[in-house]
Image (cartoon, rainbow, N blue to C red):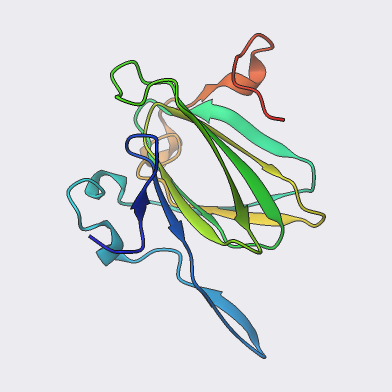
Length: 164
């Protein structure tokens, strides 16, 4: 197992502080390497696709969760994101645990979120921010012919999963 990824206080959630290599041309951050996920605990999170999203300042995405999908989220910057996690799994030793992280420009990070962990992020910076996701399931299945694997808590006005 790599020394990069570290377990968090929520079972199955892993966090890595990404290393930024910078010079006068700009910067580079390694976002994924196959050898990072060779541990039996991490193999189920091996990506099968990727997508990049841009989130405007003050905008949030989530909270939502997946039944089967693990998300491999990279917050390289620009901007900063407040990331929210809630363990909603009834069979988890950390059920009910809530964590937040600040990730992005000044603290680039990688976060692995397993199925059943509710997650959200908000751009708390002053510029547009990028998030790269490398999930372990194809969005809407092969050929986009399946139901999307999401439970969207942000659509529920009575949800206990709130962002500040």
